[in-house]
Image (cartoon, rainbow, N blue to C red):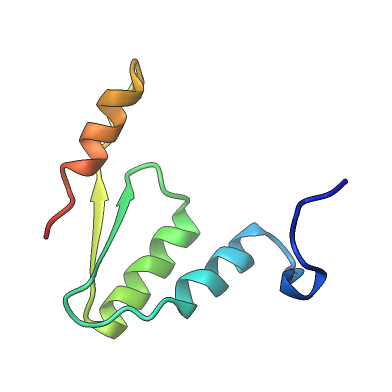
Length: 85
């Protein structure tokens, strides 16, 4: 199977949450930045975002996504309502 990536650009990790933690911790977040997520975020990653944001002075927002999901537009609107300048 081809994934279209250079072999030197691929990193193998133990599991998905480890990979997501590596990515989250590598982001250059600073005071005043915001991380926007949903109330459907995986618990371990939710705690990772809280930790990173607290440590760097960024703000973590968990937007509510109503269930049942009936339209893509509604989900996008609910999440996007948390975006600030």
